[in-house]
Length: 226
Ligand code: PRT
Ligand code: ZN
Image (cartoon, rainbow, N blue to C red; front, side):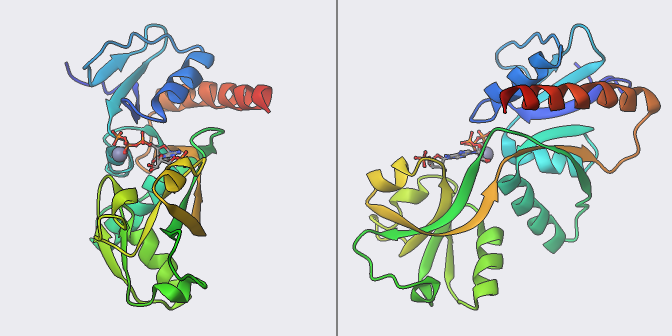
């Protein structure tokens, strides 16, 4: 199955915290989807739209490389990818079409409940486990605090207990995960929501017309939920 160049290509998370909300949003916009398990591409039945169902981490790159026209992704992943790509001299252009009303979370520093913490300076020279090394470094640089990054793509919250790190920098929504792991949130370093982003590659008028139909509908859905 190949991608039809005349159809608007939108990358969304295949499964995870953003996927249900994305599908609900598209359905609310009147896009009829035929989503089957294990498929990379889903074609809308009633509009010239193809969906690419991928890992959320791949979405910013697909948009920045112009492989897809639009993507829905958390600002945390977007900003982290942006900094990483800029550092590597890779294409990093995109525009934000809309900040969405789901996927809200914060990237925070947290330490063990019995740690001696009196502000971010307490982390000087310490090891901090995270999946967001660039966002963490930007914050710590802004605070003038030197630290050692411990890169973990999962189970970040167990790192202090495992003796792998002194603190963590991870996403938080309710705080239940931190509490269950004997950690306390100390500093919020980034606030995030899902965003709809567009590739910087110029679009054919027919694709632009589809976007012009979708955007007011998304706006309407958000207003109805307010
Ligand atoms: O497989 P794939 O790579 O696509 O998914 P993923 O596992 O990397 O991402 P996923 O589905 O967990 O999250 C997708 C996006 O949802 C994130 O990038 C954020 O933008 C957003 N989001 C919103 C969250 C959370 N809330 C959230 N709470 N992402 C992760 N969490 C995790 C957090 O890492 C921690 O483990 O949930 C736990 C904390 O939750 P609380 O409620 O206990 O505080
Ligand atoms: Zn991911």
